[in-house]
Image (cartoon, rainbow, N blue to C red; front, side, top):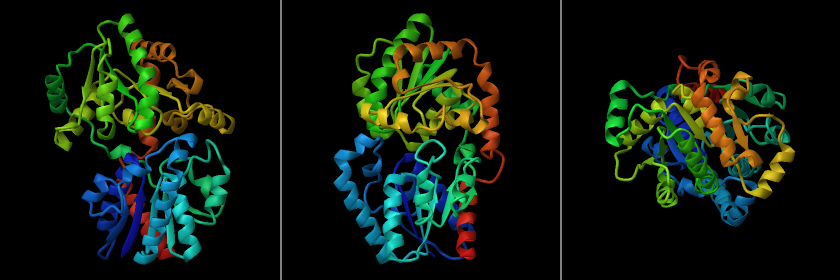
Length: 387
């Protein structure tokens, strides 16, 4: 069996690696993988066609400078797929890139195409589902309320659960080692999560840092910990060099991957509250039972465009999954240091409103059930058999 798989960012790399493990376990035949992915997918046997980081671009305006380069990569992927003749093409998230590749593949033949991670048509640009129907055969959804949006346009859509529910949570031994290594006391701790992309960090960290100083002035005993993703570790080091409040940065450089992973999940579990960029990280915080405040902003022009197109009143995934609004968020124009600081202080004073939200989110996403990668693999194999 031959599978061509594309992931465009870190979260997609995790999904791809889990799916690849699932396919190897569930398929009755040997599998050959080709495509584009990061270190996790490469560890499962993928030789990436080019560095995945080239695709990690967010925002309508931010894509423009790289448009022609990305267009070349789209054609390169489609050409590679035509030469490889896979049984199935699996595109993972990154719809602006992946679905353009899928369109070229569909125009060239009838290769089965599966898109993993349903686009958020429930949030904005609902006509994407209609456009996908002429390109994609099957969609794998991470969120339980998504399948009807895809099925309404004739695509098969399987809710396979979210991989975050299977992520390991720090144990007492790991937490003790983390605290000793970074000299973390038992005082309240705020986790700082400005994103994993350079564009996100460059926009959000200059907003987060003044907010941390306001929190420090109100609560001098609070500790701040920032786990830095490898692609932005150097940038974060430079941007926080003159930070007035004491900020402990978890730097993956020079550490073994598993050691850093243990430090990071210990920080998630230890924190009393997190201030985080919008996205999948909110679900990671739920997995660790950590209360949170969500803050996010994009380029001003992108913000204006998205504001007009947004169909929902919250972008925070746990709020959406549980159909509640208990997790505070400061998005776009509201993403200001004073708003964020007050939000964090409020949660520190009373985190009880979020306790049920984080529990319900994990249950609804499939905690205690089979791993999402196995479910996804079975859905793909069943779809191939059905076809």
